Amino acid sequence: MTRSYYSSRVSEFLQEDENSILGKLARNHQFALEDFQRNAWLSQIRILKQELRSQGDAYLIFEYSIPRMGKRVDVILLSQGIVFVIEFKVGDNRYSANAL
Image 1 (cartoon, rainbow, N blue to C red):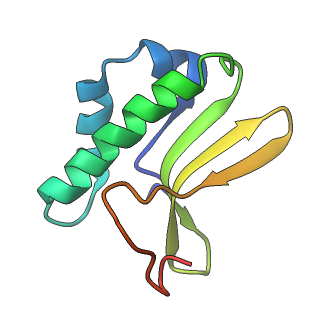
Image 2: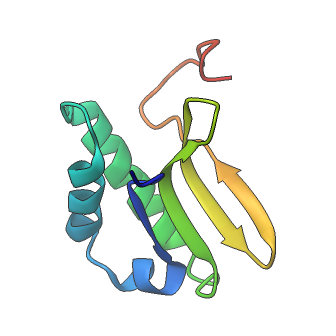
């Protein structure tokens, strides 16, 4: 069992077609893929492609399952020995207690 739906070096992510990335995410998603989730991933991919242009040597992980917690993180960015945990709320207009 893999712990993430997609992972690669940022330099490779930036070169990869967004539909290819989406396909890899969808293939590893164990549930019915709803439009909301698909659109959220596409937005995340576009945002990250724009914002990570200077982070080519970093490593990117989508939908990472945290061991022993049963939780999934949207994106992890590993850069220069620092772990950045990124949670997107694409399309939400409020934050539920679960989101916090």
